[in-house]
Image (cartoon, rainbow, N blue to C red; front, side, top):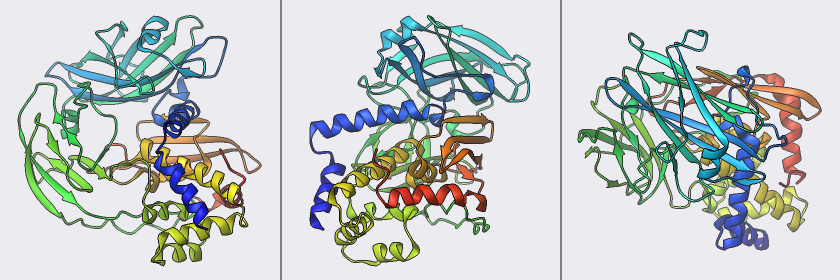
Amino acid sequence: MRIVFVLLCTLLLGACASGKKAREAKEAAAARRQANASASGDNRSGSSTASGSSNWRITSIKGRFLNHDSTTVRIYLNVTPQRGNGPASMEDLMAHFTLNYVVYPDYNSRERLGYGNVPLTAQSVARNGNINEPITVFFDVKKPSNAITGVLLAEFTETTTGRKVLHDLPLRFRAAKLSDRFAFFNRSTNLPEMRHYANQGDTVLLKDLAGTQRQLHLFRYQYEFDPAASPMNTTPRPAARTLSADSALTITTNQPFVVPQEGLYYFVEDTTDTYGIGLLVADSRFPRLTRPEKLVKPVMYMSTSQEITDLTTNKDAKKALDRYWLTLMAGNQEVARRAIRAYYNRVEEANRLFTTYKEGWKTDKGMIYIILGPPDRVQRSRDREVWVYNQRANVSEINFTFNRKPNQFVDDHYDLVRYVEYQPIWYPVVEAWRNGAIQE
């Protein structure tokens, strides 16, 4: 049994360069498959990333805004362009795509509050890091007079084929929330982060576009949030618990500071504020999970109640995890190795894509993503996402609906609408995981 655990550690620690390359290739493939799941094109408007004769395409877009001043809002779009099967460069994006946008009052109106085209030049395009990282396109939009909110529809067009990719981004022009003005910025690129997590010991920078130095209240919560419930569990959820802060202090915006401990950090201007900015601080290897006691937990989505009890109550997590995987795979170590790699790759991707105030694998989106993989397409509106899967468990099409829910820590918290009718789809896919049939 220890052989399997050694294999598990080897896969998850990623100690060698070849492992790192494999993960990067996996992440790129996930981005291509996921497309809209990471906040990309709007199906309602006929956007497409289907392969064609052109080598150039955009596989995902993720956006956010910051109020710049009293007259403008700055838009940031993290774009993943591809050339053939590999990542494209900034120069490729600038040479082969155009960008236009329209601002509407809401999702149901086609009255234009503003529109324009964005020249893709060195003044509006920047690379977040290496070639495997998204490219950021940024531009300013004039605030419409007498408008409190709006929806920006961005349209990237590939110049050779005319293929379009759309992205919708809700806007607030009155800066009602702290996150409308402040964001965590990458200190190297001076671009806002598009994620809600950092690693223990990281130096982070919370800033606005004006360079304002303002004191904020910072609360830290050391709390283990529950994983997502089964998609078939329609029992009403218990009322949210009241969290007690483990520690509190003040920080100054536009000045770097170190997050020394794991936990949920919460930043507010005033202690009576309803909404602030949340940041999950995880261990140094997150979004990967490497500690045995943490590796045990995500397998709950493919386990029986008794198996979960055995795993979580065993004092030796290493032995328990070995026994779990080998038992499922009828003692076949090679099948176990491949199943382990496939499953925990999905867990890592879920953490990277869907972490909010809790780890991505614990969210409703993360649960669906781990078991079923990236959706074939996504339909979005202001407060709803519908993930559409084609041909799962002999069902031609299945939809999972996620409703956006108000959350004090993040803007993008979604709850799954649960139905008992998911059973004929869910259980066969879970069984495929349990017998080693899924080995990406």
